[in-house]
Length: 463
Image 1 (cartoon, rainbow, N blue to C red):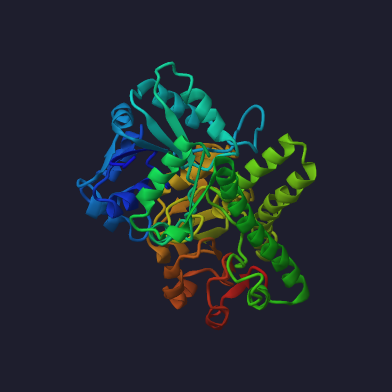
Image 2 (cartoon, rainbow, N blue to C red):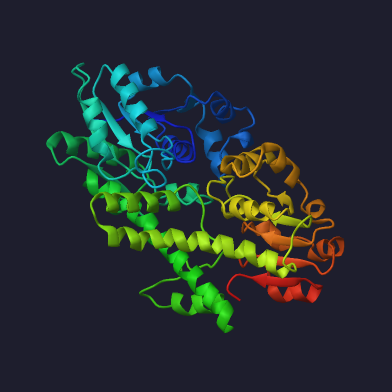
């Protein structure tokens, strides 16, 4: 089958960028991205392409090139489903907050709703592709729903997990380490796999397109994120030991990273990992292991999360202890709220939990992040339900100017590794702060010698 019409359900962090690149690289394929969120679709369609809802370096240029040519954004979900030959499901799969598997299992209600909508609307055969991060054997759930419609329409289910790193998503899509496609080993399944392979082959070398059975594909995504998160928690565990022994975690990381068996990536000690994938996927893996009675396996992976939570609490506690065991009515300026640089995504950001801890200690928090809006910051804090909405508004003030954010501050906490922070006028910042002026560098971002020479009391993770 030659694909000429693609639909993607979900215009978020995965669906939007992925479909934009497919549209750019496959000008003969019509790509329709649909979402029920009218505000989000309106932003994707805004005449000012810099206002698209996902911030990724280079993404607005890709959208500007393809939008209106063969890339479209719409809220007309039914029509897009009916017209498409290939349908990507790219909706949110949050961790369950209720019932069986609460706090660990993935909530598949949006996936099921998509499947039922496809089953209701489709009048011709479709290839349905799992793009969201899903637990193993979710394809079986989709198949059960889609194959019992009674309409006579035939569906092939493929797994095509994303391996994007936010902040570099465009480059990850243009030059992927691998594209993974899983499907049935039947003749029909193999034809469906080949149809999707042919789409990616427009720009991805054949040796980077891997095909597997659907279960291996689903599990590979969870495993990849679990391994990466494990490395972060491992170096963060060593950072605490470094602080106690006088070692420098950056020097330790450089030394072990030069071992070819280990490598240097994901050995950057920090206040902790965040984002939509790592914690959710590990908890999902823990739940799957427990459901099969593999308790030791579950305990092993759960420790990665425990270490990450510990690192965030430890960072916040260090701030309190260093500021003479009280931050009550003291102004702490947060540099960064996004979970990492070059994205406006705040999901599971360490900043949220550090702020929550300090607000409970009655601190006053000022936030500067070049891409995150005040409304999102308040939404993140309110989601925790630790305090009233009024208390969060009173306790947190957001600034569009980093220098204003630091005036009369007792301390600065670096929570996101934005490159722009390194080139600020730090002497000017120091002069505007209360003395002694503290910096707590949660990302090992700044030049320690420079900060100390200016006069700051400087503390970084793992030193």
